[in-house]
Amino acid sequence: MADPRPDLKDLIMVQYAGLVERTARKFSGIRSVRRSRFGGYIGLLNALSKFDPTAGVRFNTYATYLVAGRSSTIFEIARRRFASRHGSKSCERR
Image (cartoon, rainbow, N blue to C red; front, side, top):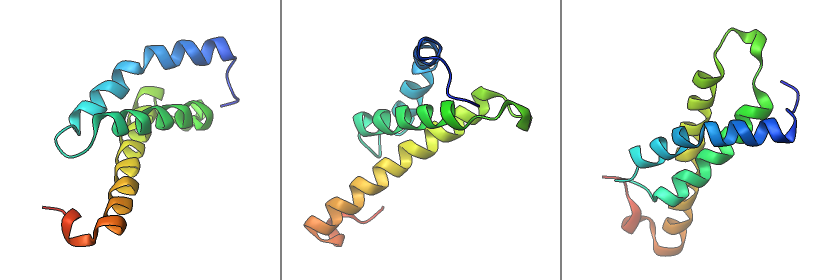
C-alpha cells in the first residue's frame, strides 16, 4: 500500500493502539511491557507501509502478525545485549 496520508496514518495508529497495548501485556511476564510496546508500534508502522490490500489478507490480521513479531524481536535484541554485558549464564531462558 502506498504511504497513506499523514492524517489517515495517525487515525490508524490511534485505532490500533489497543492491539499494541494488548500484545505488550501478553508478554509482560517475560519481557518489559515498555519494550514490547515500543516494538509493537514499530510493527504497526511497518504494517501500514507494507500492507498490500490485493493479497487477500485483512489489515487487522497482517498488523497483528507484525506487531507481535516485532515486539518479540525487540525483546530478543535487549536480551542478547544484556547477556553480552553480564554473561550468558545470567540471562538463559527458563
